Length: 384
Image (cartoon, rainbow, N blue to C red; front, side, top):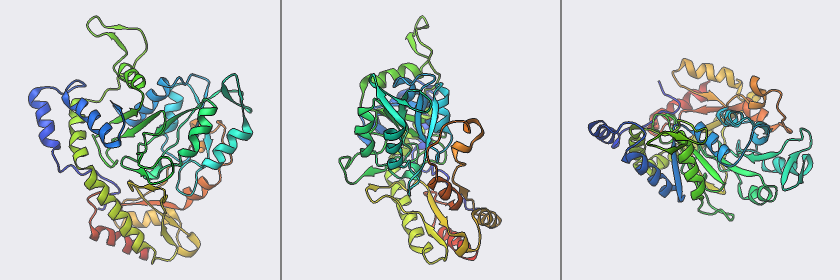
């Protein structure tokens, strides 16, 4: 079977985990947690990083730190994994769904249009004219590793007192090539950025996340909240409601080893994307989704797009055929404004997300994918 996206654990993972076991530092205390935080912060050029149990927890904590309160609203893309939206609901806030652009990211033009036409600014805050609720934050998601045009959000959000939480759970290693963000890594532009180390991400800790920020105050608050908000560790005094969200030393040890391989993983992902891009173009009705020219992409996931009329099969039919050939694929996530828990939430001019959802299929792109694997996938796409 050719899997969709699996980890590569061929570096120092076993050595570092064995050290944790030998020294009996296996829980959330230990040197590897700090090393992982420091090494990731150094890689993305962020002053502060705080490890969390997963990317969803990082998003939730970020919203809490930035003061998002129950009954307020957060602008989110409809095209993303539901964890982004669930984090909003975990803090008692309501999502407002935005459309996506050609790169599967939140549509900046429509979002700014929404702010201009559907909100009002008074008493230092932005309010939704339809619901009357305060809009406290926006969560741009760098989908599949594609960088959102964040430079266009910074001033409008600052002027409206809307905080930016970057969902960079899929984009570790992506950085901007032009605009005023040149050289900046995704996750380091907003007030707080969040990464994920789930098993299918470009690096993994089996499960885990990281919160990065330029604010030492936010980082200190994150460490406080993720360790059950301990005010006196000896006497177990807690003055706030905290979370049991810290990463274990064992997981962090895996993360340290994975970071040592990240540049190799990025090169492999870029090679895989380039190979697909070069070879798929010969197949009638199939194309590899473009990526933004304004950023150096990590190519976490490779998405192909189908023209059903020209290709002769729709996405579901192609998925079923490839499954018979032992090739694992997946569609884009079910759009969140249509998910049962969120159907009553406000959405704004959702159009392109529907089109992309219907015609997109993600194909195998693990970092250890061979040229033969890619040729097998392409051959079956051709004969599908």
